[in-house]
Image 1 (cartoon, rainbow, N blue to C red):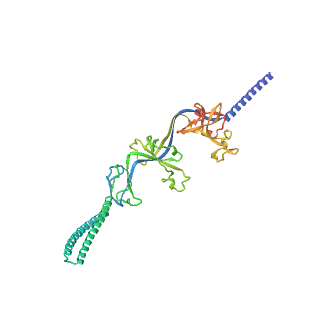
Image 2: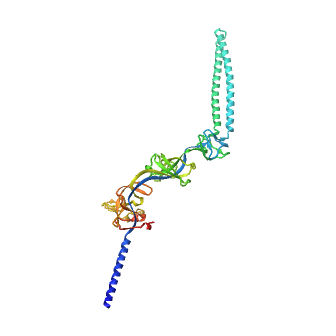
Image 3: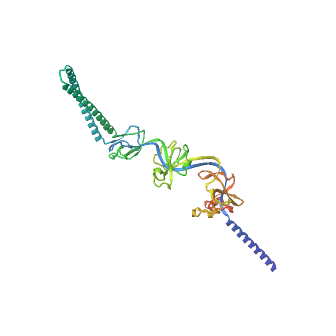
Length: 429
């Protein structure tokens, strides 16, 4: 009876030990597996876009400045006013210009009166010369008297010509002063809206004759609006004239405006600057952008110049292509046998040198981890256009294959042929 009890206890102990071994083995096995998130490769419509920020501007606008320097005596418009071409916008103090014009007019009138007098003298000299000439033919007067009469006639003719030239000069001076006087008024250069008023009545302005004339206001045609955005130099190769764009304006939440690319800058601009990189010192290593203009279709009435905006320019559309999440495509180094190098030895973020196999550096390839029989295998792929969250797969995968899509931290260190366990959706973060 005692021996039977001992056998039973021994059997129970053996079962317990076996269970413990199995549990420990399962735990260790589970601990050796990598938790991953997976997804099957499927076809979908893919749109690639370049996003860039910029500012809303009217397609046509004019910065209005005074043509002459002086004080603003009248300012006849305010911001938001609708104006017509030629409408008077402002008046510059014209007191001096009016005086100059009156002075020129008086000098011209005096010179014309003088011309009348010299013409009369010329007529008298001509008559005297004709009488002298007749008397000379009749041998009544000497050669000296004849020569004197002829010389006097030529002098009078010269005085008339000189007076006429002086009148021409005075007429030109008067026209110049009248032009200056007219320029003391500031007319609207085009039909439009006053979008900016930078000066007030009573302020002194510098005229257009200087290198830096004072801008009084801006007149803009708000019927055609556009957005000027700065596109990164790495994206500009994908942007073409005529491509469609969708514009979001920060101040108009929830509104998306359609547009088309109508202008692409030909010169790179150093980021944060307004001048081409060719004119900027030490621009070689600095980040650069290209100016791209998107003309808007049917802009809302609430759209105003100067508002910040973001344009998503559609650079490619492809229907029904194989696509996977962008983060699923990772880079791995392959040795000369084509085997995947342990990612732990090629962490670029740690600043370590690239691994070498023999004398040749390991080759980097884009690829995804394909799931099969409880483990993953790295498979190189050829990629195409990039959407908002998906990337096109041109070669290397088949529809329906299951691939690893996360987590991002796991994908960074995931090894080829690693054993995995798939997380349930509720476990994913």
